[in-house]
Length: 146
Image (cartoon, rainbow, N blue to C red; front, side, top):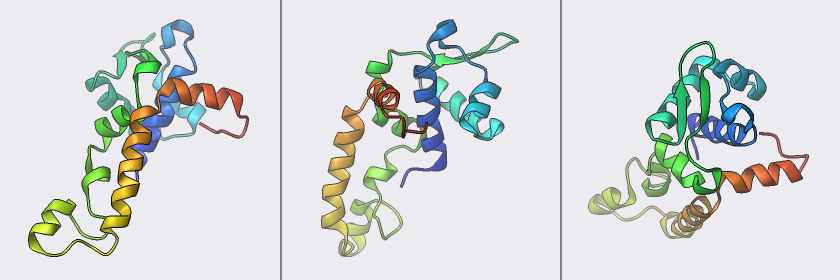
């Protein structure tokens, strides 16, 4: 449902929030090594989050990425919107395009009504779950792998 870019972005933001030392500034190589993610791909994702004012990016030998906002104010929805946009919430599960676009040309897909409820639940979950919540949960649950 979420793209790899979005999942990697969420993991990286949780990682940064869980490492507030040095102002939370961590180099891309350390982040990618610790999360076992490809460095060039992750760098593009983190730059995108910096452009959306979720992360701070600084260049140079002592540069890196850090949170620009308080993790209590960053929701999963903020990250999803920054990376994947609203498509996960608006696109038809069976057809190309949004359900509204499909409806103009034909009937809704057979899963439309069932998925609409799931879509609303996802929006509520992503809107109400903060990065801080996830960091706290990961710290309390040894099974959680970021």
